[in-house]
Image (cartoon, rainbow, N blue to C red; front, side, top):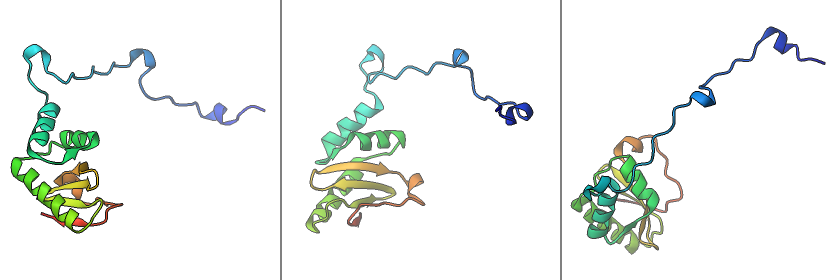
Length: 135
């Protein structure tokens, strides 16, 4: 038995044919050419290691880069203070709010799991946390 829908409705295809697709841009290398300049990601990681006793997960660094979060020495010092306070209260995975930036931290591993900027905070739900520290 043939499909009656095909007699009355012709299938519509959308999108660009495979042959004419635009190739994706090549990935940007970590260093910007031969000039020896550090990429934003490398500069951020270097500053985090220098100014903080905390380590940042790869995911947290990616989020900070994507969201253009500014992590000054003062905000990192406040984040470290928030971690100290959370540790005193025996929290395991607190949400630490520093100004308008949220950090989800694993206290046991002393590692920032993810970061959220002010633009993404509204309407966001944080789960699997056992406390919140506002610094």
